[in-house]
Length: 179
Image (cartoon, rainbow, N blue to C red):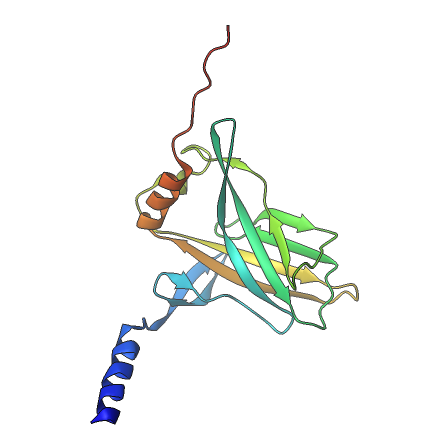
């Protein structure tokens, strides 16, 4: 009886897990397969490094909202970083977000942030649209010996996640007129 109870509890936990799904996403002129569990894509890795973070962060200054992409990778112990590049390859033309020519490892990982972008419907239109949005990034590591390796990381923002993100940012504040 006791073993049966544990089996029922274990099956309950297994039943709660979401299945892994493979999703095909067009990138440039081709298609790349990504593994996803629920709404989250599995973090990419190769024999040189693993992606720890690939996402959007908010920043507010003088009552204005900004966003920027933020990335973190964990190099394997034998990997030396000379240059780290991150490109958004969601559209046909890759957009360089970060080119760190002096990457530093802190707490076993490299972190980098893209430029601040005003969080407005005209500058970040996808963030204000009521549908799911997926971005694909190519993260490339160049080592001092010339060795180069890349991974592709997909990041999805559901309509609900985008709404929560905009609520988190809050409304922009107008400066009172001086005088």
